[in-house]
Structure formats: C-alpha cells, structure tokens
Image 1 (cartoon, rainbow, N blue to C red):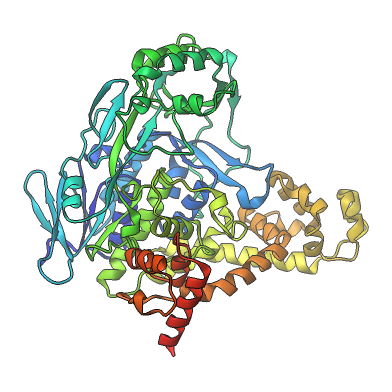
Image 2: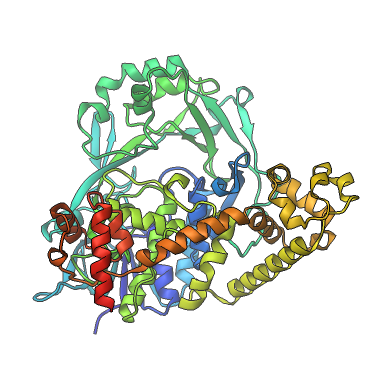
Amino acid sequence: MADFEAIVVGSGHAGIEAALALARLGTKTLLITQNPDTIARMSCNPAIGGLSKGNLVREVDALGGQMGILADATSIQVRMLNQSRGAAVQAPRAQSDKALYSALARTTLEAQPNLSIFMDTVTDILVSEGGPRRIEGVRTERGNAISAPAVVLTTGTFMEGKLFIGQWSGPGGRLGEPAAIGLGTALRARGFPVGRMKTGTPARIKRSSIDFSKLEAQHSDPRRIFFSFLEQDYGRPDVPCYIVYTNQATHEAIRAGLDRSPLFSGLIVGKGPRYCPSIEDKVVRFPDRERHQVFIEPEGLYTDEVYLNGLSSSLPEDVQTRFYHSIQGLEHAEIVRPAYAVEYDYIDPSALYASLESKIVRGLFIAGQTNGTSGYEEAAAQGLMAGINARRALDGEPPLILGRNEAYIGVLIDDLVTLSPKEPYRMFTSRAEYRLALRHDTADLRLTPYAIEIGLADEQRRECFEKRLRTIGEVKELLVSRKVQREDCAQIPELGNHIGQTLADALRDPNIGALLDDEAEARARIGLLLPQTADMQTSSVLTALLNERYRGYLEKEERLASRLSKAEKLFIPEGFDYSQVTGLSKEAQEKLTAQRPLTLGQASRIPGVRKSDVALLYIALARRET
C-alpha cells in the first residue's frame, strides 16, 4: 500500500492550491516543502490580482480555491483597475501584507484534514518499470522514498535555480534560500523536455529613507472590493502606494553598468519575461523613452521595507545604488535587499495534457512556474486544476477541462499545452476571445456549479452563491419590468429618449451605459430608479446591471462559442494514429503526434496545423463516433 494517495512537491501558490484541493476532496495528501516557514511566500511583488490576473484569482475562488480568501484577509490596499474602460477589461488588484499572507496560508494548510506537511527536498520521481510509465512516488535529498499513485510538481523557480547580481552568481531559488538541486537533472534523464527561463525582482529599500513629499500618493478605492465571492470584510487598513519616474540620469547610470550586466554579458541563458522586463532591458529596448513609471509598494504592516515595482534588475549593487539615487525622492534611499535575477529549470508544457497530467509519466501532474508561467495568479490557477484532476484520475473520472469561453483558466492552460511558450507566460485580457463573458464579477456564475458538482464548495460557499443568483434574478426582473417614466428624467436627463421603454432596454444605450461606468455612481443612480435595490448585495446589483447593459454583445459571444463548442469538446482518443487521416499534411501529422492534443479545439491552435488539416481531422473523428 502506498504511503499517501497524493504528494504535492513545493508550497508556493500552485502547491498550496493543489494540496488543499486534493485534501478537501478526501485525498490523503503529503505536501513536501524545503521550508515550512516559506509557505506561500511572495517572491516578487507584494500584490495579488491585476488586469486579467484578478479574473484568475476570482475564478480560483469560484472553484473553491484559497487565493481570493487570503487576498481579502491580508490586503492593505485594493483598487479596481481600468475603471475608465469597459467592464470586460476591469479587474481587482490588492497590495498584500506579505508576512501575514504566508502565515495565514500556512495556518490554513495545517488545519486542513487529510493533509500532512513534510520538510525535505525532492530530487527524483519514482516511476514504474515495464509497460506504460506511471508515477509511484518521489525520492528526497535525505534518501526518503515516499510512495503515492499521484504526484503534483510545483517547484517554481527553485528547480536547479541560480541567482545573479552583476558578475556574482550562486545557487538559489530566492535570495537567501537554497535551490532544489537534482530534480531537473533527473527529469532530463527520464526524457522530459526541460529548458531554462529567467525572471527577476527589484530591490527592497528602507521606507524611512524615502522623501515622500516629492511623490504622488495612490490610495484604495472608496468602495470595498472583494476577491472572494464570500465577501468577508476583514476590516483591513488602507496603506498608500506612491508613483515615481526614472529620468535621463537614471538611464545613463544603467547604461554605464551594462558591461557588468549578466543579462547582456551572456551569463544568463534563460529567456526572460517579455512583458515584465528588467529596467536595464527597458532602457536598451526603448532608448528614446525619457522616463519609466515606478510604483513604490509597501511590503506589509510588519516591516519598513518597500518594493520598487518597475525596477527589476540584475545589475551590480553599486550600479543599483547609483540609479536608485538618481530618482526623485530616492536620493538617500537605503537598499535592504538588492535586486537580482533567477534562472531556473522549467518543463515544456507541450509535454502535458490539458488536464496538466504528464504525457510521459501517467499520474504525474505539473503546475505553476514549473510549466513556464510567471505570476502568483497563473500558478494558483494551475495548482488548483492539477489538484482537481489528480483526484479525478485517482477516481477514474474524466478530467475537468475548462473551455476558453468558460474561464481565463481555460485560456491559460490551453495556451500552455498547445502553444508551448518559450518565455515566461503571463496572462492578458487580449489572450481571451470571449472577454466580455469572462468578466471578473461573473466567475462564480460560470464556475461555482463545477465546484458544487466536484465537492469543493462548502456550505458557506453554496449559500453565498444561491443568494447571489437570487439577487441577480430579482434585479433583472426589476429592470425588464420597470418602464422609464417622464419624472425619471428629472433624476437622469439622459433617459428622455427612452420614455416608455424598460430600464433594461435603456441601459443598452451607450449614453446611458456610460453614466454607470463608475460603480459608486451606478449604485447611486439605480437606487434612485429602483429603491427596492437599496438593501440588496451591491456586487449582485452591479452584475445584473452589466448583464443587461451588455446583453446583446454577450448573446453574440455565446452564439459564436456555441458554434465552436462542438469542435472544442470533440475528444481525440488516446493513441490516435494521425498518419491514417487521408490528406492530412506531413507537418500536421508530425505536430499532432508530438503534441497529442486532447480535443479538436486544442489541435486547431497548434502552430503548423492548418484549417484544412482541422477539417480533415474533424471528418475522421466524426466517422469514429458514428
């Protein structure tokens, strides 16, 4: 008998979601971490959410995950981004107290039934001999062989991690923390496609050494914003961030130190994030830019350290000091922790099914930065799905695979396993074809039914969900039954062209809709017209308003998604022989055989597979079903 039913390797944001999902689904689970004191540590920015990332957090919450709850419980500033733009691209972002976030995550894990925590470093996986290879457990640095029929790898930046500051380099997953040495080498030897990626983090400086009188402050939004649909108010404080800018003197100091940059001298071979480059990379790539924006963000209530968002670097420490001191307000800044880059092993996600199970070793699931992504939110989303699907594999159930029209999580995983990114993957709203349907406020409507079905929604979540559904339905009824009257124009003159129409119809007028772009304004205006909503849950009222305002567009997206859904959900049998499909191009045969997509939809997005190839494959698969 195996020691455990499932083992999760790594206790970052992917690892804790995977471990909690498995344990909550009744799985006897072991979480192996190099150090329990660093559980859910925020390696980089002290924040959760952001554009499209906030959507991911809300989707994780809607599926019964933990990140949204932790974000609400530890926030020290919360804002809704992109409020000047449409609802499809808005998302919440919170500054978090880093130490409290980690502590609450650890407390949650330690209190979870079916879950044990063990301190060690995994150096290899145990695999069955003969026949199809299956996972049997893991081997650790101290020689422990621990068995389990399911393993989830979430090693983050620690697998063969190497740190860089100027000409100095050394092993590590984070500054001051050891790398996980041995596992990357072992996976290479077992045939896994392992590559190298790079990321970086800015310096942390002493708050009391900053002249804040020269800086622009940025506070929380006035309305309470939640990540979790449980909407528990923890009474968190509002701590401001500050905005500063680099200047020509900053850029000159950076250019003068490029000869000692590991990024430009060739010491770093891993590919870095395109959309979150280091400051030296920005200065080189955009030589005509006069300045770059920087956010000074608090690390928490417990510390005097602040984070310099936008100044990630691996330049030598003396160069860092010079260019920091060239920035207004930072003339006397004291560096507590220098900026650094980290290079690490990742596994090419084309070696995974959309369930996040390995195509090479059955029962092995891989999630987080190990798959070549960047960001806590992307990691948490993968960890949750890997945990869910590991449990379903143990039960002999088909995996839960979210469509691109159902969730940003579906977009994320589909992109990873079909496009196989060669640089750290970051989620953007532009990656989603159905952005309006994937609004952050509708994540529970789309995904909580899955959580209820698979057993990840507890009683509290089910009650909150049912209340939301009732309220949204009640507001919709009010909007479609209430006619605009002449006296309403005294409150909202723009309604003059809609007398006799329903409020639902009037909302679709862009001139009326524009009056509701600001959430506080929307709540106040609808309260004048529908006083019955005064005591209703604000988030549900706003969701109902947005649903009616964009109904025409939503129905158009839904029709498009419906036309594509048959192909999207058409499963390709395991071991399908593409060489037997008459007329399929040689390139398509090679790409499809190598990638082994689970569905026709995934096959259609593999580079090199043409529309004509997809049509031929559809015919072949349809014939098998008849």
